[in-house]
Image 1 (spheres, rainbow, N blue to C red):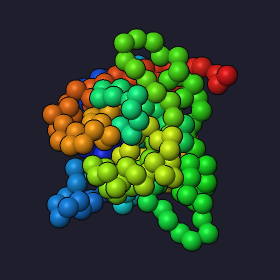
Image 2: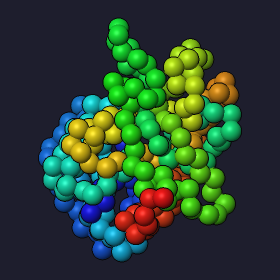
Image 3: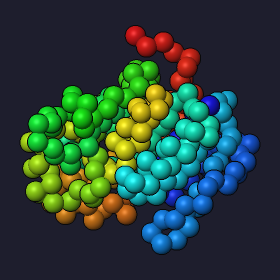
Image 4: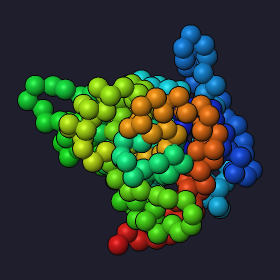
Length: 239
């Protein structure tokens, strides 16, 4: 079984539309922003693969909780964190896809700890077979393979970009849940992938305001690439 966790309803529903024979299983009661989270597992098939899909809510705490519950309940062979992100690279544009080869928490700052993409105190590896599949996908959709950064901050200020670029100069995009999901999956020895579609370009002053306008389109793009990766996962050897 392949598990997919999204932060937002729009991200989840874009993939849910593509699934077949879906049944809904109610998860544990979780509070989210003062209300009960719609913590439901959608179990079905996608390209003849068994898939379970859920929404965790925005932010690291909810991402960790949902990842733990997903792994303990379903023991997936692969866990995918799917969603959108802001570009941190001048060559990565709105509606492009980024598949992480490694992901870091850019806010970790502890004396004596190194703060870079390769240090295990703040970063985690992603599944190599997924990045290998992503490299082979052909079509109009532009797909980048590289570093993603995460933190409990929506990136929209020059000071944030400056700090990220100082420590993670090769980061392609930034978001809020991926590293929490990847770190939790790492602790439970579960292969993990992080797939993001670009909703706004952080290097352009004020472009974060395009997030809501672009959201539906980029969620659909992320879901299409995720579908292709799921289709090929387990059928292709890493080379």
